[in-house]
Length: 163
Figure 1: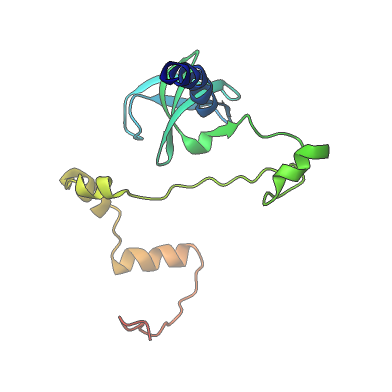
Figure 2: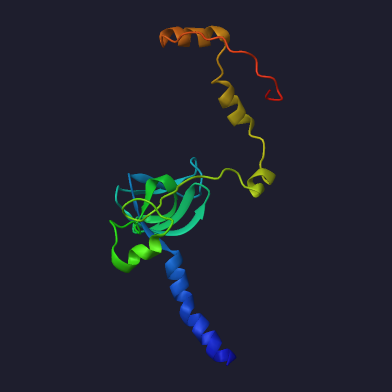
């Protein structure tokens, strides 16, 4: 009995793996990165509407496999191939809780930093120095406002407790 169960389980395993790996298409030309970071080494390039196999998701990045190479691309540069133009008959019964005429709900977002990201964070003095270059003093801010034809507005101080 255990052998039969094991064989059935092994027979279903490829189907589960196949279902997990979803086909998507790029919505614009995009770089394939070696790691899921904007400043990671570029290992390839995908043209618009290139077919990719989604392997894994991590934050706002997706690990893909493609004819042009394997690596990481930004999630917002992909469109799922599971989107369809609409359905009818019995299929519409299973679209409860979905929206639009196609019955497909799309939600894309990045949740932010994970607990592991926060625990593994390290100071980066070079990036801090780069950010400090973007600071503007009062004279620069006023010139920017004048050049943009912005009007001054006086705002009351908001206390720390929010009241």
